[in-house]
Length: 558
Image 1 (cartoon, one colour):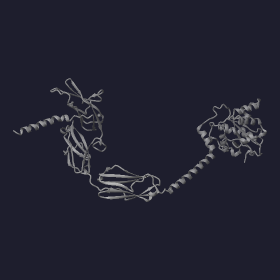
Image 2: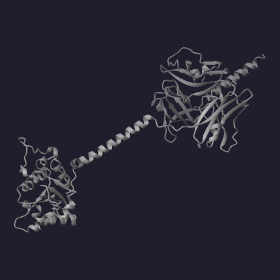
Image 3: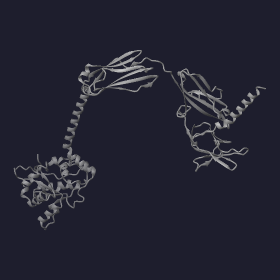
Image 4: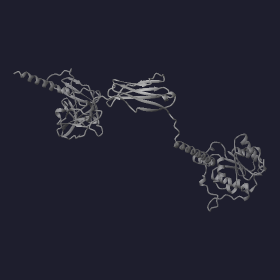
């Protein structure tokens, strides 16, 4: 009879534990994280302060979304959801299930709305059965108890199997072999790693799982290690005279509670400063450092040993720092050679570019004009590109001015020339007409010859007035035949002669791509060419090519 009270007490405690189990399933966290593809549940738990009438039916509803903009959940709209009394199950949970969930409990006319959960669904790390941000840390010291027990209040009775896997090495969702999901032993260094509990479930003919992962770290107990100065006993340090230098002395050991580190000579000089750093712990050792700061190096420091001294109950050690002058480094041979080669090469390239520009300046300008297609004659209000004045009555000059110049400049390059014999109306005032035509022209081309000064001086006078006084026209001088008499040209033309004078060299100047025509085009107004050099016919006498009039031999300069 004496045993009866103990049996009743045990039965009473078991009943209390059974009744407390459902409450333990309640999740009161505001945010819950779960792995994608696992079985998961939420339990709608009524607050303890809320009334719970006896023998009254309870209606539980689940909602997803913010309280003011939520959608009621049911198994018809989402096949993966299962509703069991006050529990919402996911078979399985997916990334699309992320969001806010809450439930309501209705008992009679009383409706209670529970605080919402924020459900976060994350993926496993690549090649692993867990996510490294969703694990439980479990540190243990060597030789101390290491216990891992795969238990879960809700999964315990519903799982048909559970396993404890190390580092995902035997991860198989369909494994139904009973594995002891409990680890109990004294920890060793090799026990460090990831331990994952797997719970396996049947649902509608398929197997699902839920997991919980522990990260076990095994720490070795501190062992006594005699302190020691790190590094070689003698150290040579390169320094510059007058510059600052810092000497660092570090001691390591298992226990540095009873030791001293100091410098000899003692830093009494105002140039010297001793700085002690805080101790650090790493790899089961303690490290202590002291720094000797030399604010500026003097000549006498090169004859002084700076000794870092370690004094403890078990040892005395010294590390010697010796300062040596830093020798300025010579320029490496390959750097000097490379620099010289680069400098010479750059100079050669620069000279080549300058010479190329001087030689080909006119060609480059003409090429740019052809590519750009610029025309500066469109809005200047003038009618002619050039007015030509020359000595009339000479057969050679007549052919050059009346036939060769128009054929090249007008027909091929699109310029418009003004020739008195061609463009002045007969019977009018010649002087007035010439003055008007020169004012309507952009250039004045003067074809020079020994007899030119005996020719039409009014053309020359009018043109020079426009060029030198009114600055309305530019003059181009063409020496058709050599001018041998000193002082033949008037002083005004002598001023222009060095700047823009072309020499006609007869047959040598006839080809369209000769220097004569390129220079003349360069001096003429900028406008779109009627045809480029490459499209002009040759002046050679090949059959089918266009020919210019043949000038008498006497007109060609040598």
